[in-house]
Length: 456
Image (cartoon, rainbow, N blue to C red; front, side, top):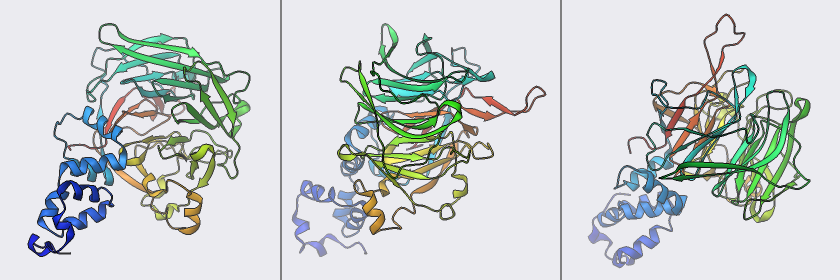
């Protein structure tokens, strides 16, 4: 529609509405309708270019807490909200920066893989993992971030020996606490213990960190490692799959409910039909819309998977729905099957997939975005029946600018509160073959910062 002058619209009741009334109407419209509305009149175009409107749309689409976190983390006082919305909505590229530097005289965590990395209480917390020689680690490292997301971090080693050394465990953020479960030690022993961690930063006293064993009674999931986990409803942790005794891959699902004081918890197995096949090295990601995303991993036949499942956790029930898509319909989709990748919820409701390895142990350095906005917030199963082609365009490849990260697998990634900054640490990377090595593998100790909105 061509833009017309204001005089041609004076017969419309919309023209006589006050700006705040028009804003109220616009905030109820889809974005495409708002952009169409802007073309009808110069006055309306001015209204739809308002930073106030686009900031409000960001709050509507992604939540006020995300917007407040973006404001706190942004070096720019005047955020161009219309451009911000467009960049998040399209997510064409991310920018990578290397934050670790071997030449800087600072204490840094050893290179490792299959560790845990979480952002909680404005701190990065790293625990455990495996290192050279197949040895486990039992160290906890903490670095305070604050509002300076681009700085070299001052890591502090705060605890050793609690919990015991392990790799392939899971660790999720629940409120201001960390909840750690399971893992494998260097003798192949599988754990099924549950730990709660709490970190605090004090300007005068520095960082304090404590771990305590959670009392879960007599019921707990079977021991395992390389499983997947996420947190829902603040005090519930979901665990799926992994590798149990004798290398058996598991397909069970357990839910941990935590007491208000985080001193007691209760595990319950949840059985559903249908459900994802058994696997390890996969990911679970909570989208914040009563849905959990499960992707990839290694199956019982050692095959690397690319199937995508959504778990509906609304109304206290659990129901798995497999989301159909064909790899040949995804640009460059043949690279999607992977294990040992990361999957992180970021700004705009995207789940950002990074790295991993394929069935030939070829490691990857690519980024993929899963469009959870394409998923209905309720009745996924009904939507599949009514619109069988609805979910075909759920994947997109995301370009990388600035620093190009190494290809890696079994690294760990976490996002800050805004979802606009991600931290990547460690993993297994391809190394140079030397005479004493049968495979060119090495453990990585890089810390990377990934920005969703470079040069905003």
